[in-house]
Length: 155
Image 1 (cartoon, helix red, strand yellow):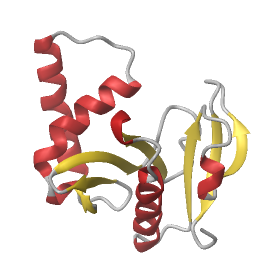
Image 2 (image 1 turned 90 degrees about the vertical axis):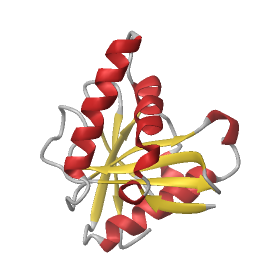
Image 3 (image 1 turned 180 degrees about the horizontal axis):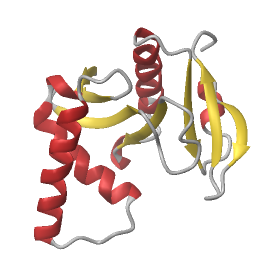
């Protein structure tokens, strides 16, 4: 198992975009719409690759994508005053329950520390999940999710 920055493994970008869309979007896209969506997302992500507050790490087993995780400058319409955000932790279904989310979590928190961040924020509707990674509850959001922070000097 190896962790890579997506900017060094761009051949996985399309797969990640499709997995992300399928996991977090309610919008059903036709084949042509999906192709256009992927094309536009690739452009957007490539424009972000060298920014301090954006990062996407991937976990590979040899050349097979297991999962990914990100740092985003913002995440959603609420609390746009907070940055950066811990986002898109995803492990493919067939690999869940094997500790890969911990590997991804540890890697993104180390990356955030390397980038000089002291705190990273996340939102989730999962109860009791992110606390095991050091997340501390801050508030309920209007969309029903909970807002958390992780103090990087403590994790």
